[in-house]
Length: 159
Image (cartoon, rainbow, N blue to C red; front, side):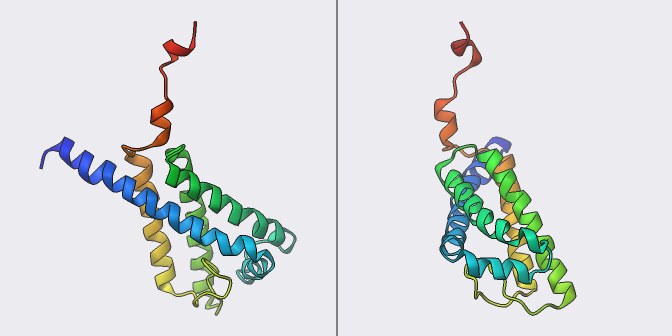
């Protein structure tokens, strides 16, 4: 298989598919949390990682950040920036899940609903796979990224 075919087929088009999938995942994950912020605050508090004074702020900001990043990823706007932000969020999620798994704390994940499935090692594997997807999206630019449609060389902008 030639290098350009591999880059186009397995790189860019796979990045597009992953971009749409992850964008949908984060939009879906945010909708319930936005509607039930008080329940989500209890889930955030159950992780015992965020200071008590910051739990409500995290519970209010995090779902909106997930929604905006997911929507931008689906739309193809600032794909590299958004994938880096989601990657950073996923690193934080992975650390939080790992800490609570090592503590053997029997809590719900809170990923999609506040009364979700119990957190297991598969939760960590799922989050790590999503992290790998964000890395792929970051490195392989999608052929249908919306921002490419509006780029103009600097020579055209400057007089």
